[in-house]
Length: 152
Image 1 (spheres, one colour):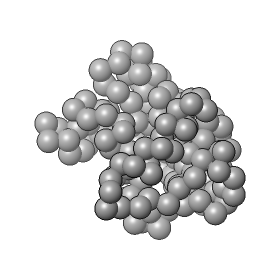
Image 2 (cartoon, helix red, strand yellow; image 1 turned 135 degrees about the vertical axis):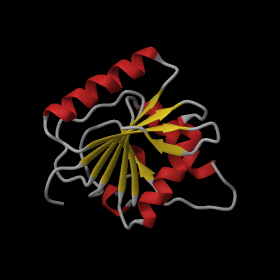
Image 3 (cartoon, helix red, strand yellow; image 1 turned 30 degrees about the horizontal axis):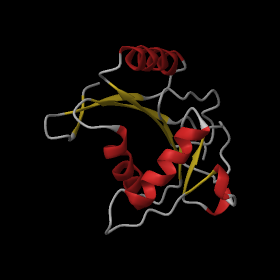
Image 4 (spheres, helix red, strand yellow; image 1 turned 90 degrees about the horizontal axis):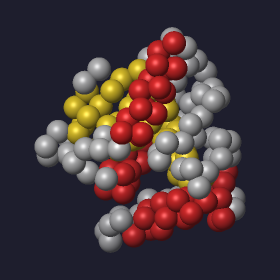
């Protein structure tokens, strides 16, 4: 990928990360993008890995995590490090994870819980950093039905 990524901020209100992440990953794969999900601990990586195996009975989302090995073969890779071993085009940052080097991504997505003041503060800081770097940023918030509405 060349150029600077778009930076999206997804503000969770009526649904949890576990409810929205699988659909966002499915949309990324539909676009032909590989995806990486960055959490903040190995335990959280394991929990998200399990989630993607069990979130829906009638669907399969191909993915792997650090413990599974062969990251270059995974369309979706879950990690707690900042590398990009599966050549992802989109990077999802969850649970307050941060990424210094945004190079190589088409899109970087911060997903944060709007009910957590610390998460909101971290998202605001990340927004400011992205704006200061001259990146294209957009802010999305869930409506009452859980649909994403662009707010900024």
